[in-house]
Image: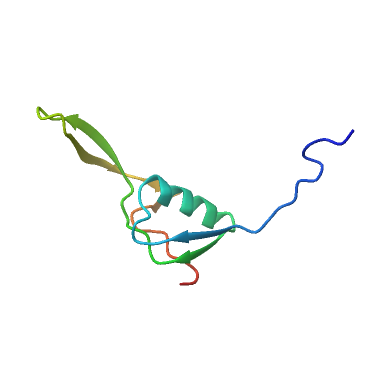
Length: 85
C-alpha cells in the first residue's frame, strides 16, 4: 500500500501582497519569499510590531507598539517588496 505522501510533489508558490497586507501576513510573506516563493503585487503595509493591549473603560482596545520584529537582523517593518507588480 502506498503512503499518502508517496505522491507528494513540490509545487511553485506565488503570493499576492499589497498595502493591506500587514502584521502576521507580512511575517508569512517574508518567510515564504525567503524560501523561494514568488511575491507579486505592491509593497506591504509595514505594520509588523509587537504590541501590548490595553482594555479601555468604554470596552475598546488600545494597542501600543512595544517592540520591532526582526528575523536574522532584518527589521520586518515594511520589508516585503514584490519581485513583480
